[in-house]
Length: 144
Image (cartoon, rainbow, N blue to C red; front, side, top):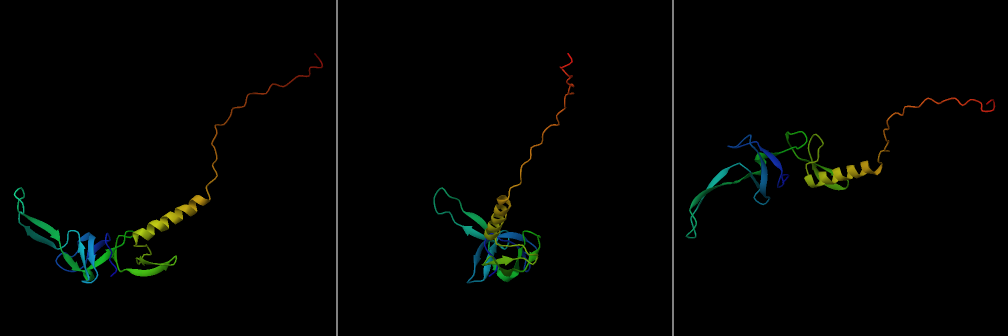
């Protein structure tokens, strides 16, 4: 299953086609995912204590994982998930080349920042231009 919790996905089939949402839960054995705002089910809850009230709760239900596609955070398009080996680790990659694994992309960004910090730029101080006072010529003191 190429979809993970907290991925942004687009529903491509079914009653909620075209809806984007965040994955709340995955079930690899049942091959389903629960997406925020998709397949809203109503659950009737009876009051169990004297101070509670009965209510009807709305909650998202599971849908088949084949009905969703991961949305790339870089290009913003729904895409198939490809796998590449980057730095000895198998990661999920978009067709545009962006890494979909957030934990790995943070590590990659930190590594890139560390490389940039290794060679700091030489700081130069900007100084105001000095106005030179006219130099008075020294006359020969021997004649005086």
